[in-house]
Length: 156
Image 1 (tube, rainbow, N blue to C red):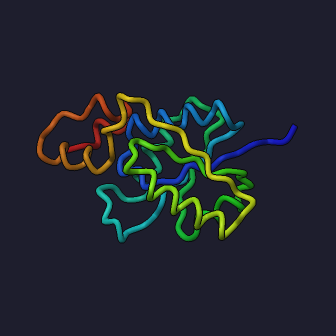
Image 2: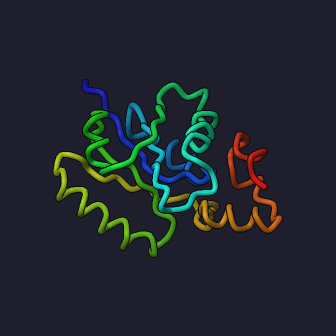
């Protein structure tokens, strides 16, 4: 039986429990998940790529089937380099679908051998996004229950 690896890309600025849920559910489908932290300074992230990578690594430190990398450039090229058969993505709401559908179609055009696999977020995470976490936290709101333990001390 072949090794089935999926790549889960994102900015993870910061990683949330919604992201963790997608990874855990992806592990039911794949032998390995590669969490790929995007190094895209144009997004003006709260945390630099090294810190985001450390947060992801610390979150999954006890899970041997999860690898973490940082990347820039085309996702399909990174997926191919790491021999991933799929791109794993989470959907929170219908509003995510149109963007994700376009992204999947473009990725398929770039490399038809790599599938896009979507998992629906659990109901308790449908409202959670990194941008909400950053915004609420910067205004003094309590988001501790929405992020993994390694992220909590790093938030304002």
